[in-house]
Picture 1: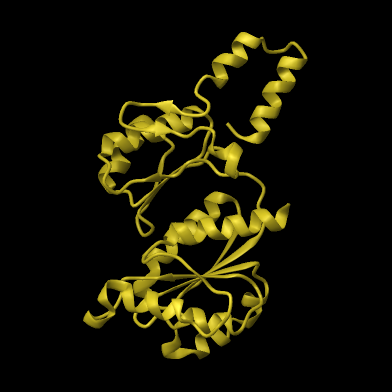
Picture 2: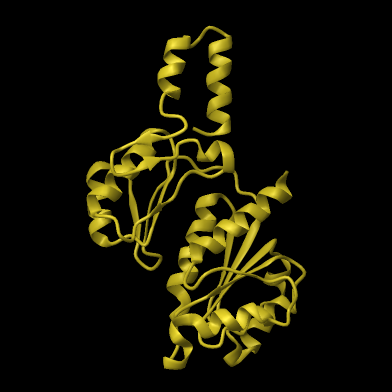
Length: 250
């Protein structure tokens, strides 16, 4: 249930096109629906502007499929991050229009394309960072912004980034994904005036400590105003970008 759907329903009741009893049935699962193993937050889009997203890690394929089915049955678009091929197979068995995105490790069910607003760049330092970057890019697109992908523009060959000056100037928000020492967000933060959301990845040799070195490097950036999310959290970066764009839109 989103703002537009609720407004339409209330107008139908006011005009006598829908009875109070019928409206009550449609609103019965607000604010949540109890599946026994999960409580689905059907009220979230009304509160936050985006529907609940499924975190697939730790869930069985059957649990992912049932959550996705109930979200879709309530008119919500479906995004499941960190989804396995087995979870996708179970989901597609109950939702034939489900799509799997192997690089992003995500499942989507999108039945209505909403108007695009905002332009978000997703920059990845190296090819090894692409899985996290693609999770961010897919989520940005799912939430309704235009995505500009700039891959393999890390500091090991800074000329690759500098050649994308026109693209950088066209962005409203930049999500910058990097492993190793995590230097790329500092460079981007020194070139642009827009919000920069940095994502450290677990890419690197032993002393990178599974992304901790990149995380600490980004937290200690000398470029002011950079926001840093957790290691490998492309979804979280996209959610931050979406909130920035929503505020700007209002």
